[in-house]
Image 1 (cartoon, one colour):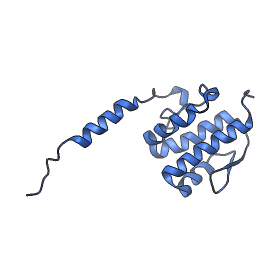
Image 2: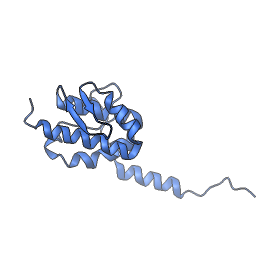
Image 3: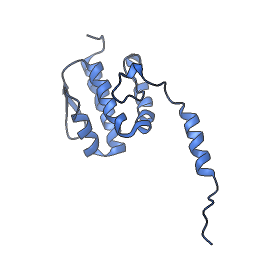
Image 4: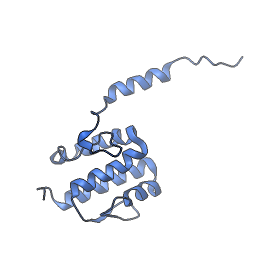
Length: 130
């Protein structure tokens, strides 16, 4: 077993779910979290218990949300996971449909993505009504 405590993983799992509750709402976030076998989640998004490899469960939980909303989830999870530096080499949030996270695409350059979005928003609208 990893040197990281079960309590630390339980808090991480809970934080992941509760962050998604803020974005997706409690019904969707808790429903998706409950689809991960081995994690028991209360209605408020708190992880009550888990069985199995906590690293694997964490990966599976994040993957549930990444499948739902991809880049948005990745962007919101990076700062959250930064609060757990001891787990940084254990948990990854790369795009991962049906793949192991460690075998997926490199992280997105979010500054570049934000710049591109701002450029798109700043473009003049050509379909004006006269």
